[in-house]
Length: 74
Image 1 (cartoon, rainbow, N blue to C red):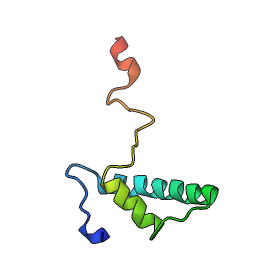
Image 2 (image 1 turned 120 degrees about the vertical axis):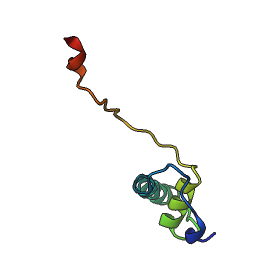
Image 3 (image 1 turned 90 degrees about the horizontal axis):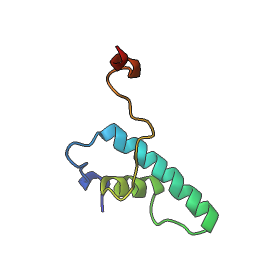
Image 4 (image 1 turned 135 degrees about the vertical axis):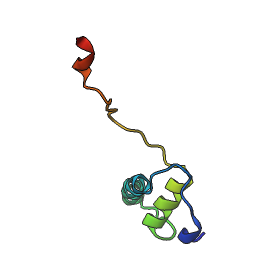
């Protein structure tokens, strides 16, 4: 499948998709080094395709609120 034909899902941030895909590419490269198996095609293209298809789980480590935590104390 051509990368040009992949369209990010509506409501997704394209910069966020790039960051997630870059981390997935690193993970795939490390997996390839450890197992000795090769990934067909380019690793970055495979990672981007997997990310756009929402096959790569990700989460935010910290959630920031709009108000400081001690604002409710008064």
